[in-house]
Length: 420
Ligand code: HEM
Image 1 (cartoon, rainbow, N blue to C red):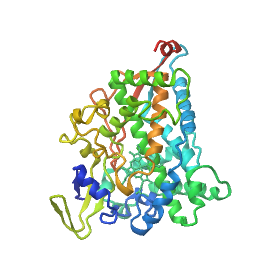
Image 2: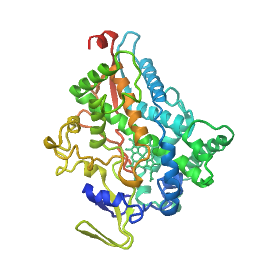
Image 3: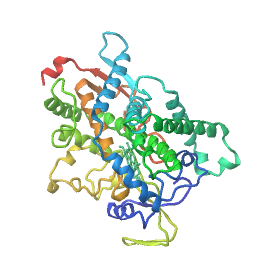
Image 4: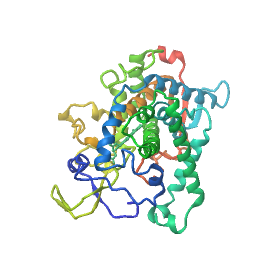
C-alpha cells in the first residue's frame, strides 16, 4: 500500500485493540514528499500524535458536540432539487438523468463549507473555481507513479501541481485570516478564537477538515442512492416510512431523523456504510518496539493498516457480506450473524480517535435521503457503467467514491404522496 508493505488487520477485535490505543499504536504518515500530506500538513488533529493530538482532540470534539445543522442540510437539499429541476430535458418531462456522484459531492461541500469552514462555496448551484481546482489537484495527486515513488516529487518536481496546491492553501489561509475580523457561526471560527491553537495548527486543520469533511460523506451519498436505485423494494420501503413520518410537507428535524422514528431509512444508510464504507482503511499505525497482537507477533517498526473494507466483508462475522441487506440492522441478535453487535461496524472507527464528526455526517445523509425519497423515484439509466455492480473510482487514500454515477430521477407528483 502506498508503495510499502503493511500488515492488514481484518479481525474487528484486533482492530479495536490497535485503533483504540493511540499511545501504543501511533499514526505513521507517509513521507512529506507525498503531495497530499504537504497539503494537509502534520499539525492537524487527524495527523498529529502524542501531546499535540492530546491537546487538539478535546478542542475539536467539543466543537463538534453541538447539534448538527439540520436547517442548513434541508436548504441545501432544496438547492439540489433546484439543480435536478433545471436539468430536465423538457418542460413537461418528469425524468432527468444527472451525474449524481458530482451533485452529491457538491452537497457535501456546501454542508462542510458553510457550517465547518465558514466558506459559502455555493457549489451545488454554481461552478466554484476553488472546487474545480481542488478536484484537479486530487487527480494529479492520484497519479500512480508518484504515489508509488513519492521521492519523484524531488527528482522530477511537478511545478504546476505544486503551484495549484499553494494556491488552494493560500485561499484557505486567507479565509482563516478573515475569521478574526469577521467571526461566523462555523467551527473554524471557534478554533481561531481558541488560545491554544497555533497558526500552523489552524492552517493544517482547515485543509484537513476540508478533505475529511466532504470526500467521505460524498462517497456515502453516492453509494446509498446507488443501492436504493438497484434495490427497488428497499427504496419503496424507505419512502413509505418517510412519508408516514413526515407527511407531504413537513421538513425533517432532529427529533425524527433517528432510528426510533425512521428505522428502515437509518438501516439503509448503515448498511451502505458497511458494504461500501467511505473510508476503506485507517491511516497506518506503527508497531513501535514490536507487539503481540492476538496470536500474532508484529515485529518492530511495522506498519499496520486497520482494514475496514475487509472487516466489513468478513463472512465469519457478517452473514452474506456482499449482499445489501438493511434488515440485518433491524433483526434480533438470535436471527442475525453479528449485525446487531455494534462491535464489527467500523466505518467511523472506534476508540479515542474515532471520527468526531459522525453525528454531523450521519444527519447530513439522513436529511438528504429523507427529502429525496419523498420528492423523487430513481433508478440507474440503461447505459449505466454500474449495471453489473457498483464501480468505485481509484482512490490513493482508501476513500470509496463511486465513479461517474449517473442516476435517472422522476419527480413524484403530489398525488403519489397523497395516495400513500
Ligand atoms: C461518512 C462520513 C465519514 C466517515 C466514514 C468518516 C470516517 C472517519 C474515520 C474512519 C476516522 C478515523 C481515521 C483514523 O483513525 O485513521 C475519522 C477521523 C476523523 N474524521 Fe471522519 N469520517 C466522516 C466524516 C467526517 C466529517 C464530515 C468530518 C469533518 C467535517 C470528519 C473529520 C474527522 C477528523 C477531524 C478525524 C480525526 C480524528 C482524530 O484523529 O482524533 N469526518 N473519520
